[in-house]
Length: 297
Image (tube, rainbow, N blue to C red; front, side, top):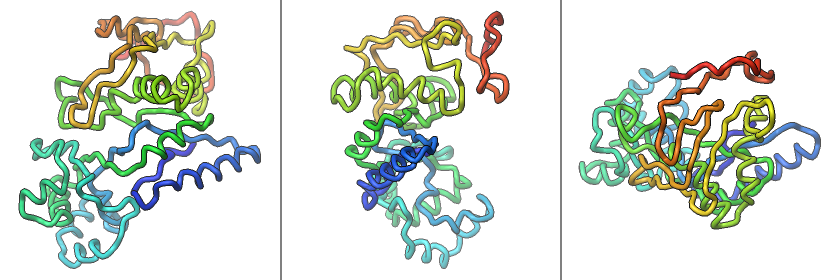
């Protein structure tokens, strides 16, 4: 499995055609290889991607120690990183000590402070022990569509747990946490016809579940776990944006997890039927059908 199939940095746009050709050649030769993607032109990563790999060697403490050295900063400036340093396209998602940075570009924050954006970034990394999350607008929409149309591409969010309330609501995370799957169904399948609705569902369910050999999920059949989403094909769409990411999608009527209704008419229920999937117990083998799923709390 190749994760994630994309070309980050404007100088690399279009190269997905070359990587796709390599994958398809391998598949034609019998290699069991697929790839996955998320349906956005921005990635979510750390601010530390703006500095070369050698600066990271030895861990975070060593990295911060190096960043304090003016000679190291001069060397960093002289070296190019693969994804580029378009600081106007790098937006802070989370910074523990400076929540007011969220949603603002590094370029704007540096300008407001009267600083060079690379110098500002180095200082921000030191202050936060390297832990500054960003949203990086670095990819091409044409590339996203090209990759999505390939029949062997799985679709996933590449995200973490977020919520519009409580501690998981901190900052302005990537909207993919809330919007990935409705975005594919509504925008790319229904509206833009990049792929068919049935194919979109397959890429997000059975194909994805098959790669780690979770054979009893991602399909609707007798004996499989009942993980189901009931949606309105005419209405389903993502609502989360980069400026307002903590928004739930529309057009989802029911979400059923292990046979229990977790979402009903857009509202969550008290039902907790989730379970951890464990190697050996759940991956590659069918569970005891007479047993009730363990409640995930």
